[in-house]
Image (cartoon, rainbow, N blue to C red; front, side):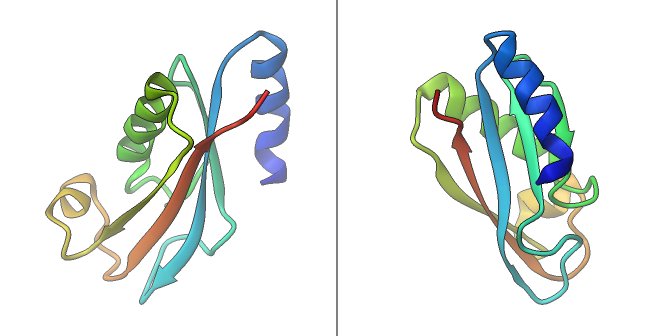
Length: 105
């Protein structure tokens, strides 16, 4: 998470809303370990990675929806048997579970 803090600080200093996605659980094989984090600002700028690139686009969409809906956050998962996850490239054979939430001001 440390690798995304400078970007988060800069975005927040510029008044941007930010959501953070964190890997909370891996079942089977996964591209990143629990604790991996990615930040997305309201303009769609990204810092960090939760999957090495294979589901980042879908995570950005979820993060932007959470910011737009003023949602408190939600758990999302992507796995090999999930048609959407396969479509976005999660072919490692496992399932990753992420919690995505807005940063509170």
